[in-house]
Length: 61
Image (cartoon, rainbow, N blue to C red; front, top):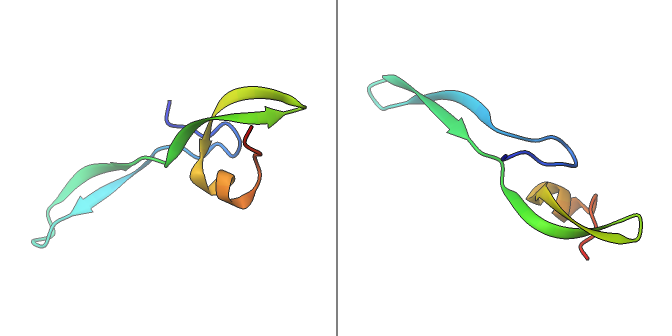
């Protein structure tokens, strides 16, 4: 569910490395907000990442 409907940004996977260099799995979730946006003159609720909101790719209703 943590996926932007505008740019498709989602979860990233990688390794969390401790000070002793032991590795464990880690996930980074995108900063997703559930906002109402204006799409073709109508209000629609979407899941949008904050970078799309900040850049103006989506107009809030």
